[in-house]
Amino acid sequence: MTTNSKPKIAFFDFTSCEGCQLTVIDSLQDYPELLEAVEIVQFREAMSEKGEDYQVAFIEGSCTRESDEERLRSIREQASVVIALGTCADLAGVNALKYLHPLDEVRQYVYGDKANWFETYDARPISAVIPVDGAIPGCPIDRDEFIACVKALLLGKKLPVPDYPVCVECKLKENECLFHKGEVCLGLVTRAGCKAICPSYGQPCEACRGFISNPNDTSMHDLLDEHGLTLDEVILKYTMFTTYQVRETLLRRQEGHEQQN
Ligand code: SF4
Ligand code: SF4
Ligand code: SF4
Image 1 (cartoon, rainbow, N blue to C red):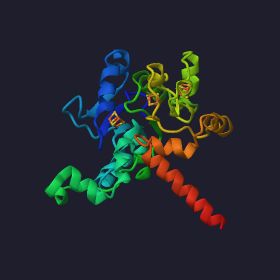
Image 2 (image 1 turned 30 degrees about the horizontal axis):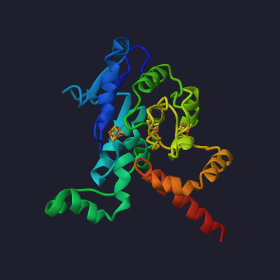
Image 3 (image 1 turned 90 degrees about the vertical axis):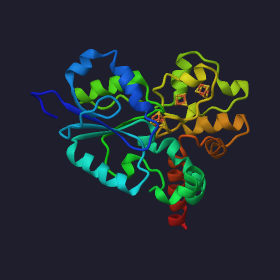
Image 4 (image 1 turned 180 degrees about the vertical axis):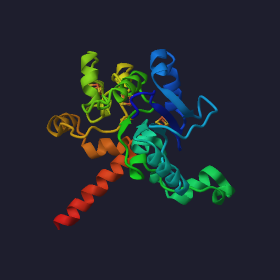
């Protein structure tokens, strides 16, 4: 990143609903000093200029077609820092729901008799195509977390994205656990950072921020046992945002078993 001039930042979108870009626009309105500290050279959602000279690239959306790959590689070649913005970019998010049905059926359902007109393949996170330097999870991203991450990037620090479960934030808010009310909540394996917003409003967490890297297996299994559930049952029940992550985990597990046998 240059030291004497403002860092140049670009935002890109791939397959997404653009909700994370809208959250970026919304959050930056409250931080004019942050806008002063950087130069945004490309951001289709917010401006018409298309500068190609940037050091930091925020990428929203999943890679869902072959032609996305070339575009992603060219962004990677230009940017010193690439950040996956939101769960579509980080984990393929809701786009990976199409794994649950045969691709031809999905194409037919969406495009009808024009299915062959449109290029598409399985949805993948950005990191499956190019190396990324960090990710800001969430569907959509959390506005405060986005601002904290931009500040960290400008200071050359690690992104302040937690790797502990939503339960921690939920407990700090003194919410009554939804398991006590007969609900199944994925907060115990999901990455915190959203301030436990769903359980705070009485809704179970559906893991829109993806799973933490090291869940506390013992207490998690104890809790699920208490409620007559297994982790696989719970995870398979909730595939809205984590289909890609679950599929990759199951594939890795299967490969591990095959190597052992
Ligand atoms: S992560 Fe969610 S809010 Fe963000 S672009 Fe994807 S679908 Fe939209
Ligand atoms: S409601 Fe969900 S997030 Fe809150 S403590 Fe219970 S399992 Fe954890
Ligand atoms: S509570 Fe769960 S589903 Fe809700 S915003 Fe947080 S991570 Fe996403």
